[in-house]
Image 1 (cartoon, rainbow, N blue to C red):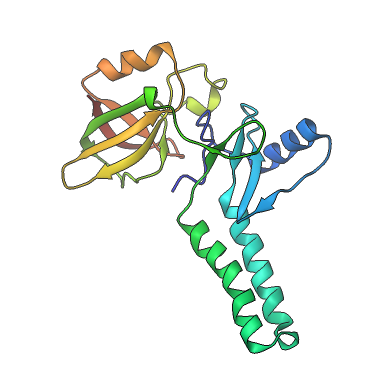
Image 2 (tube, rainbow, N blue to C red):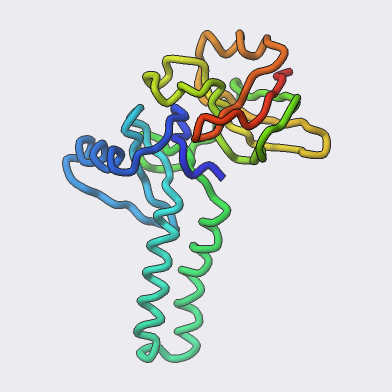
Length: 199
């Protein structure tokens, strides 16, 4: 699950820098938690994303707090109150960083115009569904949106070696990389994960 890269620019998220970007944008530290969602601002591109892992930590704290004062609640109420943080915690394990619109009002889907399909030519490490992969290992050293877009893998079939996904953003180099016989996908450490061919 993508819990390391910005869903807008594809650069590695820096938690401390993102907190500073949040302060600058809103002039104060603001945490918004609703239905298990926590919002962050990418320090690289300034876009808002849904930071689900933090919601999981908050759910654990709430759950421990409820367990700590469980003697106050009647047994039936206690069982109802404990279910909500548990559901948030369980759902957050299957979630990933998502795009949020500029008004913090909702999750945005990837643009269908940037949808791609392809084949896995060779796999070196485990290619994962719902992950963002840069197409060259220096992606994180470049300015946001200044080079070929990383790819978000939305659907992966290991049996047929096929995948579906999206370019994160439009760039003139996207079509060039799509025309090549194969391109590398890189992980967060700069290792080649797989070679793919886009259709």
